[in-house]
Length: 257
Image (tube, rainbow, N blue to C red):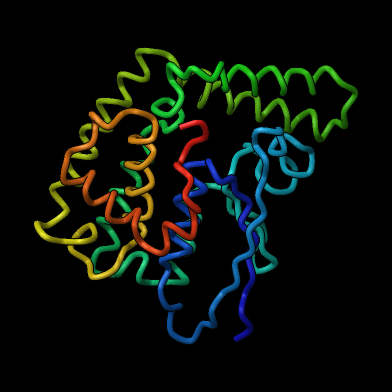
């Protein structure tokens, strides 16, 4: 079977991009009968608003977010990190071993019920990142653009207001903190004493890729008080692995941290 190739559109400081890149790094062996896939990376400069370009919104991800995967093997791009993770697991079974697939999937879903933007940027001293993007979308909408691009920008604006602008409200952030505490309590219960990886698996799974990245972002955003000591140690150990070091190149998970 001919090996498939994929392009991962990402940004080095996008938490969901890091989760997917970490999944790819730890993916293990392909399923029986399948050749090793090739993954190319294309960095989208979200600080320069490349995610708002007509090409990206109309051909890659209408939500104007990273990560996204494009490939000739699929009819359309994949642009949700959980969806991408499940697709990767269908190619690389060790990401979600059959014996633990349901629990891994449910814990990843629970993790992604948390608004990462809220916990990363609420109270930020680096200006108003949500407001900046909103203003840029509105600026483009005032220009003479194609009907297709206008529709795409209007959809992006609605998504941005729902997920980012609203996500910085104090009541909403408090809700996300509570949800984080509940999630991490459950995860700690699923990390056996002495185990290196979640659920006591012998090698990291997709759950580890998402959870380690999330904990690292909490710590890098100054929310270490939310992380139980045992999970902090678990994350620190993962951040010393070759795979994490190769992805992050010495960077933290957020700029200016």
